Length: 373
Image (tube, rainbow, N blue to C red):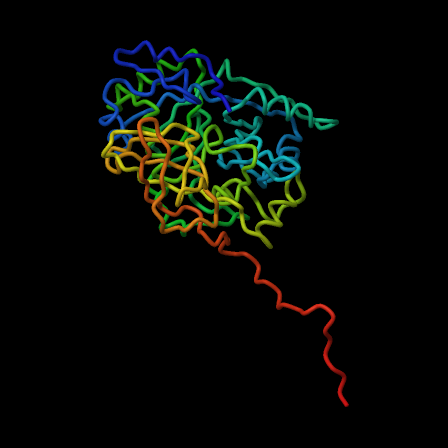
């Protein structure tokens, strides 16, 4: 998936270095990425996220309609309550992901691919009383290390629910209160794109620092937070990324891909699992997105996000075969030489959710109790 928004005016700031890949169009950093990351972690920085896309859905049927075609329970979504949802293929693979918040009259979807999402939604309208508009040219997002919904009269804001296991969800990783993501408050504030610079200046006047995506991505990796623009490929199912915590409701009505969600949860195990890698930084080498991850000379997966954390050093998220030994040291391909990597388990190696139904007792085919004499 590619970044959506226009090139940010904040790239004109002194020291700004533009990000590459899915974050192009905004700054990677402004000259001091370590200080920016520390400020963000301390709750005193703002990150330009204006490359993200924004889609609005209006009309009286908007929530029931979105509920019927995506993975999350949205019918009774209250105004200003944040959640997220996925658009799945008929086989359960993730095609789109969207942060969701409704203001009482409009449902706001923040996404990596607004044009693609809006086109798909529009194709599913049929006779429903809804209108779908890609408003990326009019609205921009700012990222803040805050876990609080907006007050009355404040801008539309999406508060990231990660890693709280929402109603109807389940988890393949640690309990919510033991998850590293609990230490990463995060929200996206929507502002008119023409007022982006003024909104940043207002925060700077309050003592905040402007930070780049180097900082926000490093903290996201440390929080094991999946992102559609980086962690997805054409085979991804939500179970592999522990995304049933926040983006899937297991007990709602039918929707496209729901059969795969239920089958893997109830009977099977996801074929792959998300893992965080601690990379050997002694050679000062960093792998690229998509770099092969190997175990004992055999490729078992690929890197999805690479970051330099101000305390952890070089780290990465990767998707690997679920059956790979969770204790083994892995090797990551890199220009200039392979890099050793230790694993931090995100999705458990056995691939079972905490509420997977107990298997039925085995029954041998063709056998029946012998009749009493």
